Length: 120
Image 1 (spheres, helix red, strand yellow):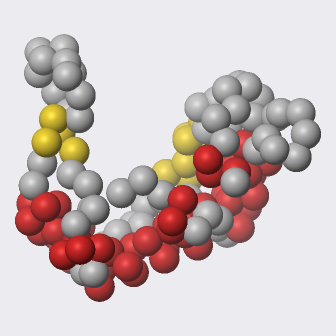
Image 2: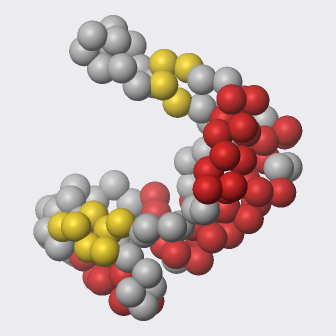
Image 3: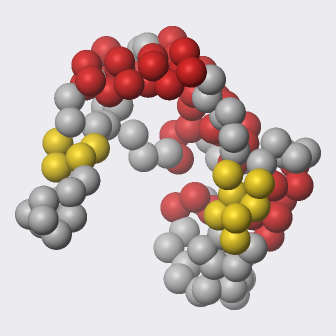
């Protein structure tokens, strides 16, 4: 599927049906959002900001769930080089959180991909 495509072309284009046109996808999702976003960069990397995608209570809930799941270092680099921690929603407890299901649906509607295409 398009979400799994590893096409590295900067223009987002590719030959044949098996390649996603990421420039076309970006235009489509930002057009469908009807002004609920601000485009920060129209060239690769394409960047759009969606202010208020989460309200304050939803941010607090996402933080609560993340703390519950626990954090881990994202990669093997020492903190003085790259200080990044992540949490994954791959436990049954996390995946059954009502807010997580709501959020996956909201993201899916925004980007046009099924939630099973997402990384946790």
